[in-house]
Image (cartoon, rainbow, N blue to C red; front, side, top):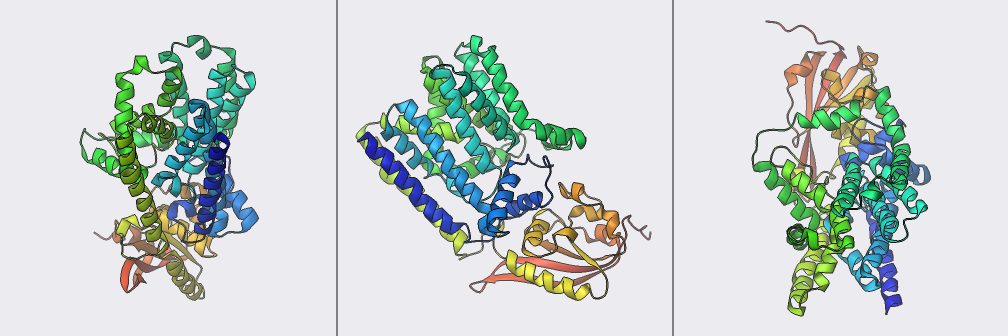
Amino acid sequence: MERNYFKYFIILVVAVAIVRLWLLNAFNLVPQEAYYWLYIQRPALSYFDHPPICSYTIGLGTLLFGNNEFGVRIGMLLLSIGTSFFIFLLARKYFNDDKGAFLTVVFLNLTTFFNLHSIVATPDAPLLFFWAGTMFFYYRALFEGDKWVDWIIAGIFSGLALSSKYTGAFIFISLILFLIIDKQLNKLFSAKFFLSLLFASIMFLPVIIWNIQNGFASFLFQTSGRAKGVRGIGINYFLQLVASQLYELTPIFFLLLFIIMFRNLKKLKKLSTKELFLSSFSFPITLFFFLVSFTSLVKMNWILPGYLSFIILSVSFYLCQKEKVKRLVKYLGLSFSLAFIIFHLIIIITPVVPIEKGDSWTGWREIANRIITLKQEYDKENKTFIFSNEYKIPAELAFYTPFKDVILAENVYGKPALQFDFWFDVREFSNWDAIFVYSDYNPSVNLNEIEKYFSQVQFVEEFKIIKRNKVFRKFFIYRCKKYNTFPLPTNN
């Protein structure tokens, strides 16, 4: 029977991989994917918003399969398969059997976040993979012989997790908390622990070097920059986070998250060492961001790596329940999760009704084709660049048009523009004409500000994305004449 559950695991991984393989080409890139693809068009040790592993993965995929949706996303699918294997192996060690390990991977694949980040190219896919690998090797180091090789590999994986996304830092917080609470201070101050940190630092070194070369721009953005968003205590951001995590986990797992978290915190001193280890890699990051949400915005994907070990704990909790509770979870909770995920995928693949800002993938090819036509026409009169009031539209137009080297963002009119500030010196576009595009999903545009930088700004058209006779999105296009890199004086 043990061998059968391993076979079931392989069948499950292969089956979902085949479905996801088909999904890779099924819809346009979302703006974040296009933005990270744009990263690797200008290779660097790191980038302003994020460390580089996601963009490197995209670069390898597009090198092998071309600059298309499949090439951008294939690496994420492969990483998700690796995540499944590490979680299976970790759960197998925790449960000491294949049944619990198989159920863990089933539960993991019944969450929205794992399905989404198995096909969408964001830093979360490599983060989840390296976080899972880190837990596996630290588990081996702590519970299976204290071998040097396990500490070293764990350090390498943790450094690569941090080089995927800065929230990877919670790996070290989680590990240190575990060693302190479990009173293993001898390991906390051991040579093996410090060697593990050394290898993690080596893996993270390119990000450090990039920051040194660029005035610590990324570190400042992710620390003091984020701190500027802190407001007085309120409940709005907290409620937004609750809603987003209901979506990411699906309701049954969201409910189990708080049941298990508060149960484990209540009986913290009575937890087994292994249960404490899994809890340490889940609940600190979860609690931290839920507490932060009372003062500032917490993005829906920041907590995700903490859910990997929680899924193992949820299987343990499920297996200890009475049959009536198991049936309720299985037939109501898990069935709803499966239906929710299928419904979600249908909405992505086949746009039926507009979901406004919730839809970030529909219409990019259409607007790109329109911009190609306009730019070719305007170039006959004067060289023309393209810009917008955010990073999303420029990133998408860079991917779906051949004009990535002349597509800018808010830096055109003196606003901070994330990585675009590092790619472009706007003075190179002096006296060029421009096409300005913005969407009704981000209408925060002050045309008076833009007019200061051009001799003339003319409205061209309202371009609608229509599916099934319904308007899904509107783009507003302007033609701007003779760019001035410094604002013209206003007439008072």
